[in-house]
Length: 335
Image 1 (cartoon, rainbow, N blue to C red):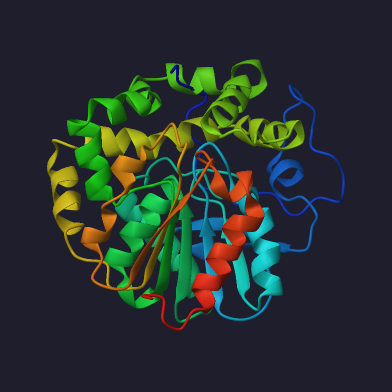
Image 2 (cartoon, one colour):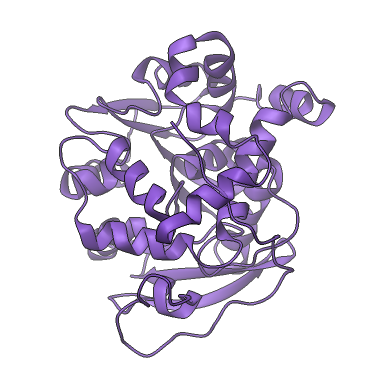
């Protein structure tokens, strides 16, 4: 599959825009702003928090134990809109953050390795004034959730990962399984300079829409949702920053920093873990994701959603939210 790119160099650190009054997102080609695209009105509030040397945009709703939601590529916090309302109604404090370089968060010139991005996540937990959080991550957000649970176990109460194996499983699958390598062709394509960013934002980020539809199962996203993700990708420097973590993940495999990270991830996850996956995921094969439980020395539950693709939380939000909430509320999740 072809891959994306943005001509601009990453912007220097800076705060994102303040909330905008209600109104539709900017039309394609009219230079959308962070406020107009990533801060839509809803049953949540928007604000910024400082953590790990940067500022992060969050949307939050509800009261109770903290559940921190981490998006994947090519999306931003809004991908969790269905789960946020469901979690709030179930008695949780639901917070969805934009990862570094995406949405309304700072676009820094560096800091896109998984160890630093995981420190962003745990730093946000501290900035929210909470002793810990249940981490819920999809795709790249899931990779970071695994990492945070290993690096800062005292700050992670429970772990939920969707559509992403443990980092060590991901690495071995990418190197040893030709089918997984082919399924993740976009990640190999990201290793080229500049061209991927340019392709991502070309024709008002048309590639983003194609990727989301191609990676979904039979329940395709509606046009409005796809348009929202396309607009968010065209915010300056977002394409470049979105690709940088994947460049590190591949280019570091043979470098000392990558080898050290892989060794560090040998440490077992010691918090209850729920692993969710769509049976029709064309990006991350079920075979690659299954087996991540070998790195968990705590209750581990594997749940395969039949007939769903790479975005189960959006393709069937009711089933996903029900599974998530029932597990979060289960005092004995190992049953």
